[in-house]
Length: 196
Ligand SMILES: Cc1cc2nc3c(=O)[nH]c(=O)nc-3n(C[C@H](O)[C@H](O)[C@H](O)COP(=O)(O)O)c2cc1C
Image (cartoon, rainbow, N blue to C red; front, side):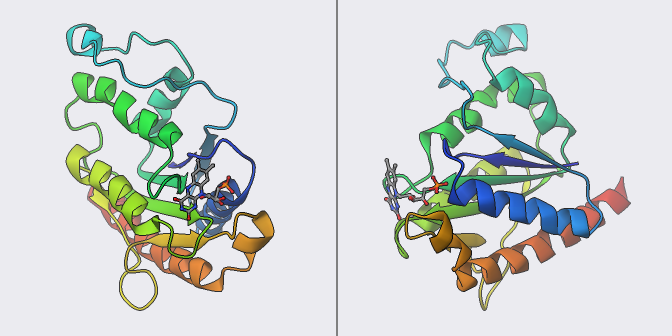
């Protein structure tokens, strides 16, 4: 299963692009699951270290529904709107709360394939920094970070929404970066499935 986590609190550009990505993957034969943070309560990590001692997170909020999906997924797409030149606080809370999964299994992300999607209101609004934050999460948790490569998707799938849903739909370069990234993402998932 490929899990798409949407870090936007709105049903707008980020959610649209992530759902389009999951459709592309379904067309390639992958099973997908969408988990939106819109309307969910996912509190920040308290660094209480309860998880280190008890092997579970003490905070019983909507993150409890996401934990098993992250464990199950072979591939993860984290999608974020750009807030102040970086990723959303909602998505960052998810990353930090994964400390509880690392407490149970240090390598909880090992061999999962990870890609990112960023959506900024401005054409150059912090997409690459947000993407770097997502890819860094994959690197430090042992996942395989993916971009779409040179000539269109150097840093993965980055979009310019002009602050509207209509704007993101018009972003041909963004969709080019998405298609290239999905192509490499699905290729890597196939490769790693074969090795299991
Ligand atoms: C608090 C906040 C900060 C933002 N900061 C930026 C920014 O630094 N750069 C940018 O390009 N867009 C910024 N935006 C605009 C959003 O990234 C843009 O509207 C995006 O499409 C929102 O995603 P959504 O359509 O999924 O809600 C910001 C929006 C909010 C609410």
